[in-house]
Image (tube, rainbow, N blue to C red; front, side, top):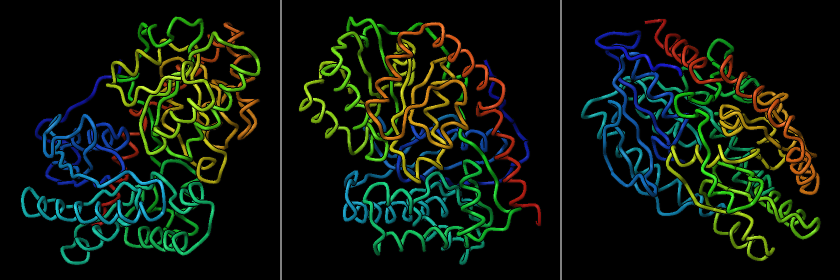
Length: 409
């Protein structure tokens, strides 16, 4: 087990004050932001986070592991373009108000903005231009591609997102991106200088994602279990997974596989309705978000894990933390064949034809029928995480980015 190193009374960021802005998920549930915040805190900085409330994260203010968390409500979790305008407008008002309150209280020297949305540059730019605070743009999602994945149109909102992304990079003192595909975007349409862009991959925390005895109740008495964990939006492609389940149950007569989809998001109620319409609701469980211990025990009971992300420009270029969390638990993976998915999983996964639910189902049944392959792939994935992909390999890269932020002082 990797030990978390705590700095007491010193460290490379001693005396610094950092404010994280995160709109799409609450902390500490937001894994990447929480790992970054803990790394910065352990390096000596005073850390504040502004993020939304959610079920299980209703407290408007609390301190966890020495990190100050300020949460705000959101009116909805949007599925359509007008809904996103309402969600993001409300979020910007709340986030600016809380940032101002923190500025007047414990203060901050730098704003670390984790997109989406790309409107956070308005807050970062305000404090940078008026109060000379530094601004980090941490690109978790490429929002123009995210919009295309959701709505499939290059309209005024798409063009607006391109402008917002460009302004985010332009105002940033440094940019942090999750992989080399995103780095190319930062250097290209973002116009960033190469020495101002830092790749800090998302990686599992091995203290959190440890193999353990599985909770067999999630299989509901069936021989095999297939697990999924993640946000449930349109671009996650879970409708392909349900189509694959439909094919396996009704097309092939497979009644010995239970599917478990852990997580929440705007598509979850619609996916549950779709499962009922397809007559497969008994074979797919949607428990929502689970506490870490229950989530890990549930996934450990699965014989393999699945990632059905829609094949599009967004997902092809994006690093998915859930893939590496599956690997950390020693689980073999079946996923669609996407560029960054292969970069992460390599030989720990079996690859289906993109957006082909029949082939996805075929790859699942083939792997369930080969226990030796499952064991081999699971061991390869766990070893790769332990040797190169875990978060503790990325934490020094984050600290190097922060060092560059102040190197001219």
